Image (cartoon, rainbow, N blue to C red; front, side):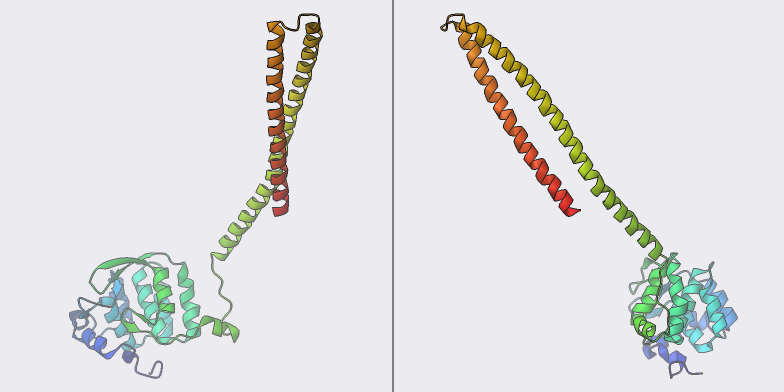
Length: 282
């Protein structure tokens, strides 16, 4: 049975395929394997990867992927592979085989739900060192990359093109609801801040008005006292030292009062500008 118009084994490049045939794992563990026995070998997997150690040694994961291309298990068996919840490396092996042999619509249909699997996988790089990746990253690489685990992946149609011809429904992520809830909460917080700012400004304005009223009453009382002093001072000699001191103190109070009145006017102007800017932004 041909896959993608060719022998399924030829989906793996010849030089990679020959290195797999020459490896000890292939000779010892992959001889005369059936679909049921591949499951047992998949349960023993502890990492995924392609070729390592100077492009010489293939990983057991790559060897089993080629063996599955040889025996071509039924579709139901492959779907059982990717539905495994307990053995994550069997799921990864089934996802790789499915990506190599299935049609584009089926690949999106069966692999996209695995985006919700966040289990950690061990990946062996070309230097023979382990790296930590996650199942959703592995699935994303299968859907987006042209080459992965040293296998040239068959061409995959773009999802948007399949959506336009109604071959696939529009993609919906489980995170869409959380994103909508987050955006709604942010909008509500912004609206509450906009409502609270004018109230804070008005309260500050009222407090300053009260302070100004108290200051005005205090100034009125001081004027009355100064007027009474002047009336009493008319009967005293004009050249007395006490009258000159009173006059100096009066001038100092007048200057201080004028300065405080100017500061209040400047503060009122700034408050009005700020309030107008807030209402304009709202």
